[in-house]
Amino acid sequence: MGCGIFGAINYENQPVFPYVYWGLRAQNHRGHQSHGFLTYSDKEFFTYKNLDLVPKVKNDAIKEWFGRLPGSIGIGNVRYTTSGKCDDVSIIQGTQPVVATIDGIKLALSFNGNIVNTVPLKKEMFENFPDFVYSCDSDIVCNKMLLALKQGKDLPSAAKEVMESLDGAFSVTGITGEGDFFAFKDPHGIKPLCAGHDPAGKTYAFSSETVSLDMNSFVRDFELKPGELVTVSKDGFKRIQIIQNPRPAFCTFEYAYFARPDSRFNGKYVYEIREDFGRNIVKENPDVVKESDIILSVPETGDDSAMGVHEASGLRWERASRRHRYVTERAFILLNVERFSTIDKKINILGSKVNGKRVIITEDSIVRGDTTKVIIDKLRKAGAKKVYVFVTFPRIIGPCFYGIDMSTYGQLVGSRHDAEGIAKIIGADGVCYQSHEALIAATGQTKDHLCLACINGEYPTPCAQKMADVMKQRFLAGYQEKSRIYESEEVQA
Image (tube, rainbow, N blue to C red; front, side, top):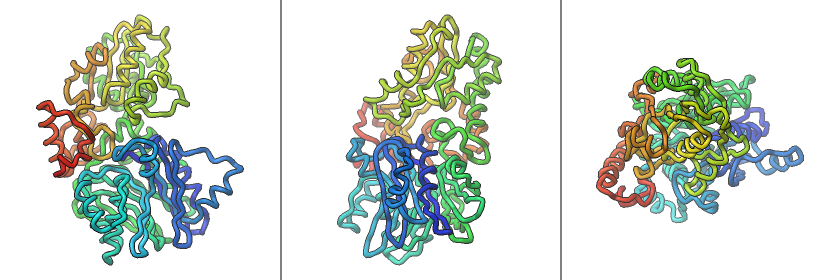
């Protein structure tokens, strides 16, 4: 599931809730559907979960929040659904953090990612936990780890059991019933997870993105390595490499779309990387640049690449596409029935600025083509003479199994059409994608340290690769996908 996670521990016995609260507020872009807080005090877990964005806390309600969520250890989660049902009842049931208990042993987890081999894992959980209820993948992760603890394994051994049994992406922070605070990443490190502390060295935290550390005025210490477990004590972080010599496969979609531009990965701010994306597309498409008049962006994830296009081309970046700030839904995250109307209301085109102009519009990615199609239609109605789309993320040809909700071939316009075909579908005069090579170079990583599965079909985990290959053959033969591929018992059988 697409999520943002945050956790913190304070060693002066101060309430941790404010840190977790602001940590989640800073990451609400990672999940709009629900939010949850969990704190630990006197060997008890205290939780609060609800739908929608993390709420504002009014001054007269602060004491109530502190009373509801006491303790100096806490974890939180913001979520959008990539597994399970999408109605409100199901979403709230799947809201994290999750808690599991067996024979007096307790465990609470906040999880970001997606598990691929859920069918056999569910079977194992039902066999070992008669009351097991599956509402989201975090239930599997939590109960799998709890089962290992029940068998007498220590925390590193339990984490290893999870890492070796689960196929997929998982960045996790958690609290045991004894108050042990920890975090770990899957053996490929597909999802981001960093660690930091306050300047006084009394509070330590884990976060999906560095912006949550910034929000709390914390110092960033490190990004967790693939297959690494990190525990916390008064002396700071203890790092344990559970899986030796893992093959890193960090999600490239974080760079193009998902992460906030002011977060840092691999020592670089995301916005700097996105600016390089724009410069790269200019270099790769000089003829289109030559016959264009102005640049627009799809705000806000297209803004940084627009700056790069502007700097490399010399064309004016006309700020004539504006986002309505308080229409906060991210169109990519929305359900199909909500997407079209929200896009239309979310983006405003200043018609007089584009009338008669040949326009380059910068877009972070094209998944279904819905967003881009609506915006191009607005530009045409405003009198744009030509519209070219510069797309920073290469053509998406395959589903994601790791926590981005593009989970079937059928919903991906790029799985059936090349750039020319996509241009016709969305009404553009041309669609220009950044090349794979340029994308990789801009991230500062190497190809063998990134997950590029959705653009090259090479999945870092074996179960995902097998399922993608099977479903691709069926899709090309005319099979109509009925659900997310990784939730299909037929494919996993």
